Length: 241
Image (tube, rainbow, N blue to C red; front, side, top):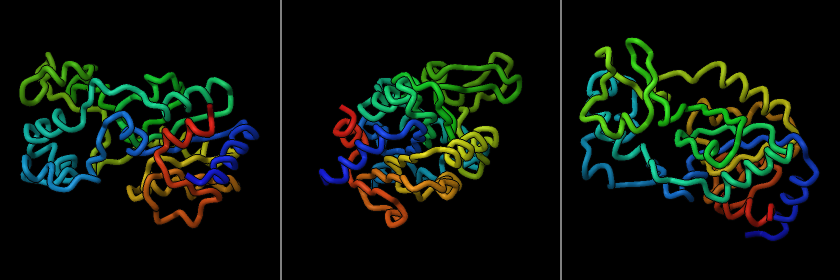
């Protein structure tokens, strides 16, 4: 990693008291949760459809049992624990520097690490509800169910996650936009910024400390005030020791 860039990041974090973090799947890969978009033949060997199709609203409605077979197998990682990125972000929030974590992830690891103001754009696997009576069910109920999880009232249980073809929660997106618009420094980490509408959120940032930290290059690297190629957990550990 570029030592000069790491020093700039370190100084900016020390100087700023209104930081917002916007993260994607790359934040959780260091907790051994794979990014399904980065895998090739893995799912094709076991499933007849690509992940994006299975995780769509229409597929959930038409082929619910097949949806749940994939969902339980590939989207729930009960034994995953927070990594350096989650822990350091929680520490920055506790110190009063980080005002919000905006995440595309659905694993709940930011909260597990201690972050309080977490805006989950795509929901969470930890929350599930009956489509009929709205009763809440935890993730263990989903894991231990056979086939399609069913409520005591007979209704079908749906994960509280945003599927393809579904809209984001407007209350959460409004809060995310507010924090991005008003922050002094925006750190974007572990995301290729290809999934919309979430990827368009950085357009709301008008400051001069836009930091992109990602293992690979992104299409918006040129827009960043500081661009670091590396794993988000390793980068934050290097500058926030």
